[in-house]
Structure formats: C-alpha cells, structure tokens
Image 1 (tube, one colour):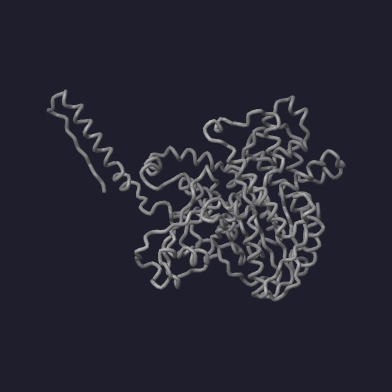
Image 2 (cartoon, rainbow, N blue to C red):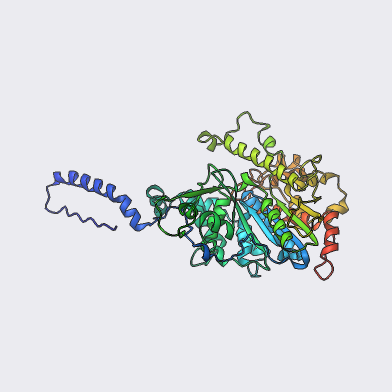
Length: 515
C-alpha cells in the first residue's frame, strides 16, 4: 500500500507547472487514505480483543471465581470514580490499608473510572516495594494526563489516524495511560501480566451503551459475553472504558465474537455469515459509580464456596462535595465558561446529578441508614440477603465508608475544635492550613477560614489532572487528598475499630490506635 510519486519539472514550459502540480496534488489527496493505512495501520479499528475459543481460557487476577478466603474473613474494597481526585485519594487509602495489614488479605478490589488507575497500578506493582510506596505512587498519580492527552492530538501520526482510520480520542488517552502507569514496558501491559499481592481479585468496571448494564473486565465476562481471552487484552483499554466520560472521550469498542458465532454450535473463531458484531463501553459511573456491586457479588460467591466468619466492606468514596454545584453558581448569573460557548455544559451537570442519585441508592442498598444524610455516618452494619447456596446465612457485614464528603463534615467543625485535638492532626494537613494560601489574594486569605479552605480543596474537579481555581498547584491538592485519606483511615470509627480488634488482632497486624 506504499506509493511513491516522482515528478520532474525539468524541461517543461513554466506555464505548464501549475496544471501539473494541481493534478499531482489531486492524486496525492486521493491516495492519502491508502498511504495512511500503510504508514499508520489500524486495520482492526479501535477494538483490541481477539477471538478466543471456549476451551482456551486463561485465568488472570481479574476473575469472578473466588479464591480461598484466609481464616474465613472476607475483606472487599470498592473504589469510586472521580478522575485524578479519585486516583490520588484511593491510592492514599490503599497505602494506609496496606500499612494496617488489610490490603494483602483483600478478596477483591473493584474500581470505577479514575480509581481504576490506582487498581491497575497496584495490580502491576503491588509486590514491588520500589514501586508500591508513597513516593512512587504520588509521582505517578499527580501526572497531568489531560495535558499530555491534549498535546498528543497534535502528533502528525495521530492526526492522520484520527481522520483516516477508526482511531479516536480515547485511543490517544490509552497510550498516555500505558506510558505513565507502566513505564519501560516494551509492549502494552495485558491482564495476563498483572500479579497483585496475595490472591486479590482486581475488577475494573464500565457500562455497556446498549442497555446501560454494568460490564466487569473479568475472565468469565470476556469468555462468555464477547468470546475473547482477557489475558491478552491491554489493561489501559479497560481503564479507558471505565473512565470514558460522555462528550469528552469516545466509547471503547469490543468485537463481540460470541454474537458472531450465533448459537455456539460452530467453533467460535470460525468464519460466519452473520457479519461482525461489536459492544461499546463507556464510563462505569452510570451503572455503579462506587463499584460496590462487584464486591457484593464476590461476597456471595465466596459465601457459597466456604463458610465465612466475618466480612468487612471498605468503600473508598472520592465523590465531590454535595454542595459543590451550589458554591459554583451562587454568585453568577451566567455559568458558561469559555468552553461553554461551544458545548452546552448542562450535560456534565446532568451526568453529575445522575451519579449522585445512583450513589445514594447504592449506599442504601448495602445498609446505609435511610434516615441519615449521606456523609454523616462512616460505618454501619449490612445484613446481606444471602443466597440459598450460602454456607452461613446469619452473617452480618461491617461497612466502612471512607469518604471525602464525610471528611468535609468533620472539617466544618474545625474552628470549634480544641488546640489539643488540632495538634493531633496529620502534620501535612496542619502545615497546609498554616501555610500561605496559593492562588488567593491577601484580602481573600484574611476572610477564608482554614476549614473553608480545606473544604474548597476537596472540591477538586473531576478531571485527569489535579486542578482547583483557587488553590493553585497540583502538589498542594495532592497533599490535601493524601492528608485527608490518612486522617480518615487512622481515625477509623468505633465500629471498625471493634471489628479490627475482633478479627485482625489475634495472629495478625493489630489495629492502629485511633488518632
């Protein structure tokens, strides 16, 4: 498909140059798509899954099959969406849980959108102390993915692919994820290369456009739903599907080999007359922004496999503060930004409202008290409706909700706290409150309290970069997120403290003293 056009103008009359050049330009324009196919091959469109026969399935850490639960104590962790805000907050929480000895014994980690960056990074490097430490994690998660993504739009090869192939905006971000999360990898990291500590299952969640159902990147889902092997599928594509926010990113495509095979009587990878079929995935938020469904399903599968003695569900919730939108517009008669003159941003607000409503229902579905306001309670009990296959049907689970919203409720009382209590706070958070406030003029610094400053810092935008209109640089914002995460985990509520004493202290890592 490579073409070379050589034109010699020597010996031609000067007046004949222009028509000849016009014809050459026309031919080059007509052949450009063919040349693009040769130089920038993208013959499979954007889908990266390949056909896999039913009997060739290979197990990966992303499996719906439960493993043996240590001591019969089930620990499940779900992490919400929220761009880089969620990536940093969830990473800080996992580091703290690791220090407590809980993380290695987790049966499952379920992630959505931004927190899928954290889940994938832990699944790849959780066994490597040179990568799984606070310094390395911070350096990775603070990265401005959006800026890199925007700059790569201008790469000549990306321009050609974008206009002449199925290559799209999400494909550019997939490459960014690969380069930042897995530096040095010669090829794209696949699910078959993941190796988290212990026997933890890593489940990344997205949403199917057709029907709006939850799609879990798992061995069984790929085998049964799309007729593929997950072990050969790039992890960056799953992250992108989980975080493909509407109107910003394109849907991630999977070729549906199972649908092409029809009733399954023919070999799945054989040529059929049904034509190609596809599934399209986007942000996991609409089908479950907390990622809790996958954890509950794993809990039931584990209860059917062995008798459980106890269970703890940890919800890492980076959802922005409930009153963020009110603060954004209460002093404006026109909410449009510069971008808003081109695209109606009401779509973003409507999507946020959908996620807020869905989040509240998800929390109440696992026992959150209906009479309580979301964010006012950080621990409660959950009595699952056990299936008939469960070996024990009287077990009650403890739920630990590590939430930015709960942190805001605590920060609202900061000005009324005693000096002794304030001195016990995380040093980074205390230093931040005492330091000059970047991005604020002197008059604003004098009128905004430390509690209000911290509250504003927790309203970091849902974006693949850490940005806040008043608080300036990403390092400040990351410090706030890590400090709040540490404080939330270390000052765990009495219910969680009791659970840790009952089920983790004997023979295990003792629960840290409450801060």
